[in-house]
Image 1 (spheres, rainbow, N blue to C red):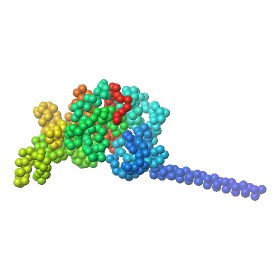
Image 2 (tube, rainbow, N blue to C red):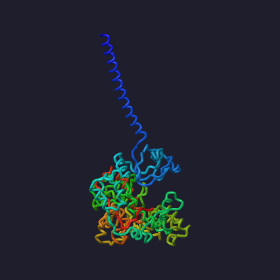
Image 3 (tube, rainbow, N blue to C red):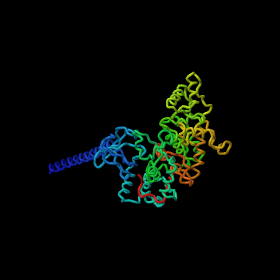
Amino acid sequence: MREDINKIKARARDNRTNFFILIITVIVLVIATVLAIKVWKHEHYEGNLLTLQNFNIRKAPKLDAEVLGQSSNKEIYWILNTVRGEASVYGNKWYKIKYSGEDAYLVKSDTNQQVITSAQADKLRAIYADTNPFVYDEQFKKTLKLFPESYRLPLTYLHILEPEWEFEPFYTNISFEHAVAEQSEPENKNLVQFEENSEYFERFAWMKKNDNLYDGTNWYPANAEAIAYYMDPRNFLNYSGVWQFLDYRYSGNKDSSGIRSIFAGNEFLLQYSETVLDAAKAEGILPEALASRISNEIRIGDGVSIIAKGLVHPEQNPLTEGQASPGFLPKEEQIEALEELRKSGAISDKQKEILADLNNGGAGYPEPKERFYNFLNIGAYPDTSKPMGALVNAARYAAGEFEQEGSSRYSSLQLPWTSPEKAIQGGAYFIAHDYINAGQSTPYLQKFDLVTGSNSHQYMQALFAAVNESDRLYTAWRESSNSWGELEFLIPVYLDMPETTLP
């Protein structure tokens, strides 16, 4: 009997040992599995990608690789990782994604793509599948009813991504066809850039109406199809495009962080960040909006236009395109520019005299006693009769030639703009009083005049100016941790809109 009891005890000990071994094994397997998943995710998963425009999906991260399809803003892509590939206009980063069950690649764009959370992705997928059309709140449902049906789905996407944003329709009370026709005449009302044999400008070829040159060396009139595309708000109801409908009225920002993110990489502009902030607050303008407009008008990469440095004088026309007024140039550059004019047969008698004087050791063009600065290209009306005609007009405005000296407006504008600070402060007054306070409080409404009834009170001639400004605002907002406070977007609604967008 005792022997049987000992056997039973031994088996019990063995069972307990086996049980403990089993528990330990399970724990080890669970830990290993969790770690494996984390490692796999680290190596193979970066997030959910929402594209805001169509991108070619390729078999390899190269521009000549086989195209497998195009991305859609109604699909969400699973990012496996980010790789270096062939450089494009967006840079050399590519996303490796899953597409139709296989590995594929599309270029990484900071302005036209958005990595979203799993929760946001789930909500969007529910909308795509039409399985949960009530993911938004009751107040937003009321807002949606104010917009036409074709606006509602993209606005719902934006609401899911940014539930604090507010959208308000701006009813134009005119037909879309009529609005496009009004913007098509005169033909220099909307200009596009184009250069032959340029890979970069090739994509704009379809926008050009004819060969009539209106500004510089590459600004031509836009055709009706291009105008219709840029005027149709539905083409830009996405994460980066919607910023052209941002209401520019001041919302209480307290520092210059957003301004600095817009000016990032440009030392010249960065030194005026606080001046821009103070000017914006004084005139009731969203500070980032003023900074974005300045950047849009005068920034050239890490430099700025010569008008922002006071190098165009209204009494000294530049001799060639892209060059400062001759009095600001060294003698050697004055001679070189005049020689080019002589060779081309475009030199005047006065210029011949100055060239002869320079060649004999003379002083040449005298340096102007004053500089005039224009940070917003105000008054920069095109004039093809002279080199840099638009900038000469901007210099004339900065010198006070277009306003009545001694008037209260002249004083409020702080004319003449003999310093960058005056140009910024006076420019802010101009935008606030001539546009924002007059009802044109968004980049779109400043580009396309739907307020005054004249269709001519427009800040910019470049057809895509509002879109460019929108891209800058979006990038700055994203890089400043989305900390601009409450934002409201005024989105135009036309009568008799086309069923589908163009092109």
